[in-house]
Length: 344
Picture 1 (cartoon, rainbow, N blue to C red):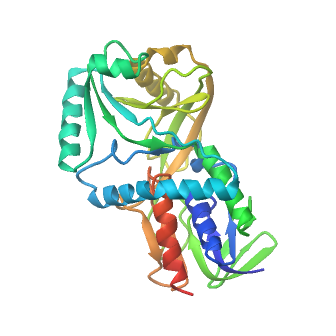
Picture 2: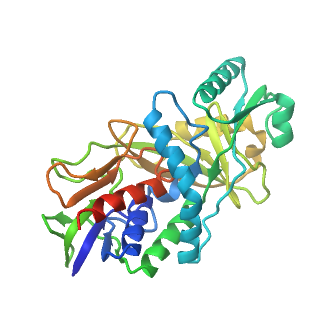
Picture 3: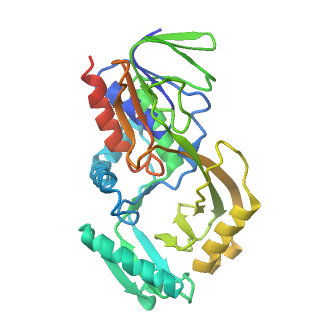
């Protein structure tokens, strides 16, 4: 089989890039080592939250994040139109909350930081916070509202897979380890010749000397059944965040530098549950649906690695997105597509 571009990696970054490249007239094949229906892109929170997570020390990331957020509306509309799937977009925003005096100090610091960065936020007293979210703890001292958004990662992935199919991307699933040559990739009994290859394998670094350095940072998340909504906003509490979805509540997430170690530690699960319960006692009565594990691809800086290899002109990378893969999806797909198209 021949293709203009082979994309290695079937997460949100690889799929969005493959879809955009195919929609711009290139023949594209996508190769996923594991399953297109599993992985970190399915178990993340789906938050589009550059405001709540803004930091002075990451100006380039903040700029890229806000640019991507501006692209999300058109990206979403086109994706839903092409795929015929909705992606669970929500716009209630984020409430950052303080439970102790030290939390109030940190919240005030965050407010000053947001003002210096030119970001819009709204400080709320305890009564105003509980007016917006009545199930928050009566211990709540203060809150800050940020205009953020979110999507449903499983729905986003389903839409991207379908959009790829409808634009002619050849999808290869559960391929195992691949052999990557100068102009071909081999896996199992299949060989695909290409003009260019995009490596978007997330935390799984390919065996090439020019490959960007990324490491897996494990994240554990708890999924609770939520037949009746107990909150509408994303809640960022001191020791956990809570992300409401249509019928479930996500509680996350740990940051563990333990390689690709699988499984959920009892201590980590306990810490998340306690952190969520302290902010919103109602979680005590919700059933646990599942425990999820994912691996964030963290690079040497906060910015992802996008662009051509320093060794081979037909090799491109899109990796190192850390915890911002979903947020940066439209920006990444646009930038890496432009890079690749210039090589033709």
